[in-house]
Length: 209
Image 1: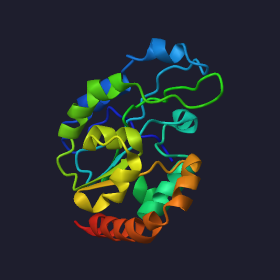
Image 2: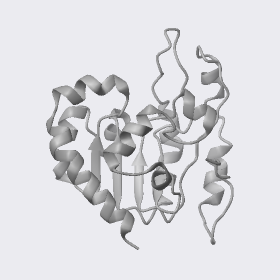
Image 3: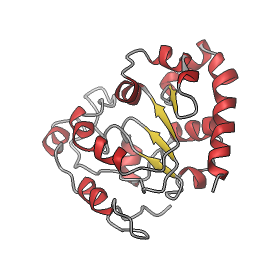
């Protein structure tokens, strides 16, 4: 899949300058250089103002850092299954915006564990990006960082259990990482109750002109 040019305007798209500034961001360069991965910043910018579905993720992983395509990994496969979307539909910039809490891969520690998204990224960019997405009708919160930012909730399980509170406008989900396989087994109500309703609503939203 080709990586879109973050600076390219489409049909009078006023958000192109914002995307270009994010793509050029180097605020965390020193932080990333000090990690075990010692990598350069590579913001993964994937949104256009006409998007109706917003995927609010956590941060790109190492594989996404390499490809420049959000959720281009096993976590993305699981998330697409939860949403009932093909990879083509999921990555359709005309309908879906994918905006993580940090645009760059945060790096890994000495044990190979992914580091959390640097808060400075959301403080710098998130409000501007949200204002540039006027057509969004559903926001899917993927994982604790997004749930805390958008809902102010510290407990992921409690937030997901209360999924009906703002459904379908806001839908909190656990992170689809393999590390949460145990959580999914311990909380069968998620697959039985949340996912069918989520898939139905996503299908309806994606088909709406």
